[in-house]
Length: 152
Image: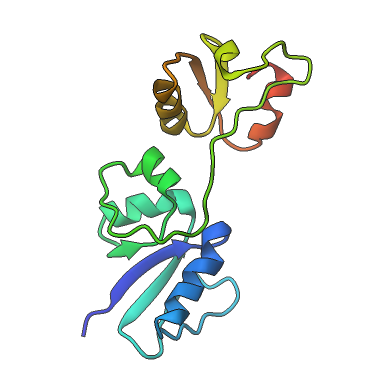
């Protein structure tokens, strides 16, 4: 019998709620610490614990059949993937930070400015919704320092 393969976030906001959801529907997962894959004891299912940003590619490649993933990651890396169901947990929001000394006091003050982000598709959607343009500087890693080193 083939097993359903589901990807969940290895660590982070979605992991705990994802595992609770599986438990709530009666699936018993026996996973040890730092395990990357675990089988359900009572259902033909395997859980893959993956980096959030890698999950869309595993779905595209057919390594997993389904995934519990943040919509923000789909916007950035998996726009062609289908959302089967919104689960209603682990909300996030777009925030824009500026240096304390900045003269920018409202969103429109950022018109035409440079914005550093790890989420270019999300920021572009946000800017479009607010009828604004900006130059995006794509960064990864320690993004919170960007405004203080002149990238925001």
